[in-house]
Structure formats: C-alpha cells, structure tokens
Length: 209
Image (cartoon, rainbow, N blue to C red):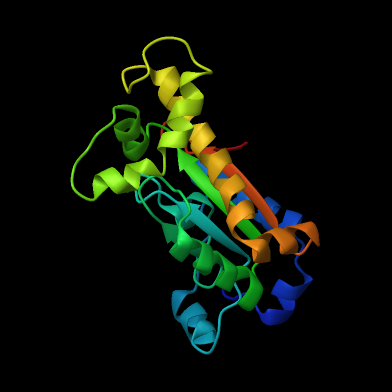
C-alpha cells in the first residue's frame, strides 16, 4: 500500500528520466491490472500543506483515458492538464511553467490517444461554435499527415487519423519549447524533460514517440 506522499526532498532528488521511468512502470502495472493500493486518508493529510508532484501531464479530456490510473499515480504525484485534443495554449503553458519552475516537477508529458474524437473532427474540418477555434490548434497536425499518408484525408482513414494523433503530440511539444522560454531553458539545463506518447484504447499501453 502506498502511504507516503512525495516530499520536497524526494522531488528534489528525482531526475527527469527517473520520473519518466516511474510513469512507464506505472503504466505497465495498469496494463497488467496490478494498480497500487493507496492509503487515501493518509495521503490527503500529508498533502494538505503542500504538494511536490513529479510530472505535469497534458492529456485529452477523453473519459477513456483516466490519466492518473493510466500511470498508476495517486494524490500528490502528478499535475494533469486536460483539453480536447491535448494541445498547448497560453493557459496550459502557464500551468506547465508553474508545475515545473515554481512547484518543482521534473517532467512534461504530452499524452495523445488512439481514435481521438477531437483529432477526427479536425480531420473532417468540423465547424461548430467554439469547437471550430479549438480544432484550429490541431489543423497543423492534419496538414502534415496529409503529406505523409496515402488515401482519404478524413476520419474514415484510420492510418491518417493515427498519424495525425502522433503529429499533434510532436507539434505540441515543439510549440511548448518555442512558446515557453522558461521550459525550454529548464530542459536545456537538464532540470526537466519534455516528452510525448500515445495511449492505446485497445491495450492501455502508452507508447513513447
């Protein structure tokens, strides 16, 4: 049973690659239905006065991707930002900067997922209310995939959708580095790592890109 929350000292001693390894090991436990039990009351009590998460994860809002469960994390372990299509914007960049520069997290993880509804909508050029502006953030990934994958450039082409999902993660990482000098400098100095992966709805596995 997990009954000890991450402390400032533990967080401070954690290297970015170790934080990533911890998440991937947690994903392996998730895949094998071997999630770690947690002493929730104890963790709540320990974290009331402060938190020292190891990572910040940018994920889609999709209900089939329960981020903390996917990586077998519990209270105090990770920050999670969620938006349909798991792309960065100024608010999420600010949240990531807070997570790393202020709160000490060692890892930025952009997590896309298989058969993403937002990605499919972008592939199909959907226009509807505020969804239109949201999907504009994914269009660069759509355009790139259209140059890389043969066949129809819409959601009926599973290979096209999959490539767009991957491109969206990679382009989001590129823009995080471009738009956040704070995070880019931290990564350059080895204080953090910025990585990405794609979650399989079929298997539960997170595959690194």
